[in-house]
Image (cartoon, rainbow, N blue to C red; front, side, top):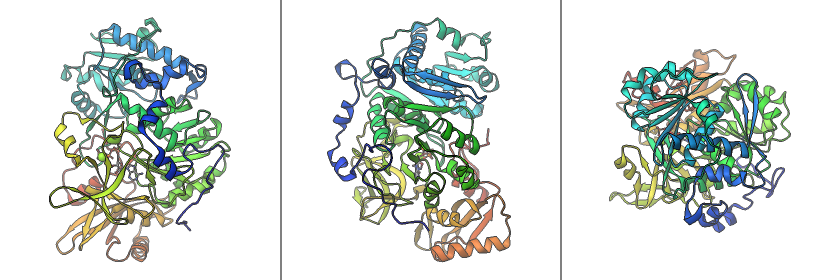
Length: 586
Ligand code: ATP
Ligand code: MG
């Protein structure tokens, strides 16, 4: 049974939550106070890397472990805040020494190796713009991003360079320099291709961090490409105020925490919460170089004594597939808070957290465009499983619709509409690279329109309905795929479900579901009928799927989201569109 509300003690867990009383803390919050939690630079400047690293390295946390790196081969390496200051200073000196300064775009294409983190932080110190690309991309998606992003410098590994970049070089006239991280000394016979480690070793260890003003571009992130061609969102140094405070309030980070964000820095979560927020909050952050493996993950949670864990529904579902026994073979006495982002988190998954870890999973919502968490379930606030929670202090969120004359109207509680945020939070993106017009279209009457549909209940909890692009219109009903998928995954045989609208001459669209089964279950007519019956009983005939197909696995983006547009294109025999972020694609 899934409870409607998981109530909590006002002060839950092993340490006092940072946000204790939602209503009071929301009312009391101001961005100016949040800004005052950071040190800033003279004259009103602010630099992400200074707040993340130098501020701590200059104080009592200098010798504290900032990053604990777990290599694929079992290596375990610690970097203190002082180490990170020195290494990022060296990289900033490398850039400056070679003539790259403010505004230069420095890309990284690498797995989760220490050099990635050093490059990002050094780039930010130098006032240059950092963009990390997911290392499993094939040459074409890499080319597109380097081109749209007008990359000046690329840091990559020798292996990735030979496999993916060398052949692109002449099609990238703007790319002036490549820095190679080799296993030993990198072989650099090509012009403008230098050895990262050798340069770093020779560089000075002192660096005067660039005094960037809050509006100076710092980060470039490409969206996941779930609904179409990925867009490049530009973020500024002032965003660090939101990175910091959302980590403190939504992830409940305390300096004594060991924190593990499982996202790759090639996606916004892996940057905002895999690099910046844990460091600004002064915690020890775990980085695992290896890819997902349930047993490895359980071991990391236990052995590294992770206390706060931030992951994604796709990982949770994969762990659920293996059953709770796998989790129960381990003990996690330090673990006190689990959060998830990226896709809807089914109520089953929230409760699986309770079964496997003794803790519910706290869903939260945000986007590449928002730069930081905007809606969340908090440590001390009751959870309504299936809801994404309530807006962050400092964030005004509403469910809205557009009136006939194109104005914003706020929906009543329970009514479905588009999830919107009042513009002006510090980590708001500042443009879509090369598409300012599209950026401007996201804003109406001072509200940012997210493209997601949701409803807000009487208590201010937000419930995800679906992406505006994915919503199904059938016989006059609007059907969110999430609702249907959630019901299908209640069935013990179902590992994952993806639901689309199929054009229909009578009903406009009918609901079709694609289902991947858990280990030990076989597709067949009897199971199909059972699932159709289960869905009809739970959802009613108007909303339940009319058709169910079994697939060995559903198509996902590389960041783990179900690509419904691909299910639809394949079903209808239409072109697949941009598949650069498709998992397993090239
Ligand atoms: P693209 O914009 O290229 O189609 P994308 O929207 O998947 O890709 P991201 O910015 O990585 O790219 O993802 C943000 C989106 O992920 C949100 O707009 C929402 O649709 C979905 N999402 C994130 N968190 C949640 C959540 N907790 N519940 C439901 N959906 C979520
Ligand atoms: Mg999007």
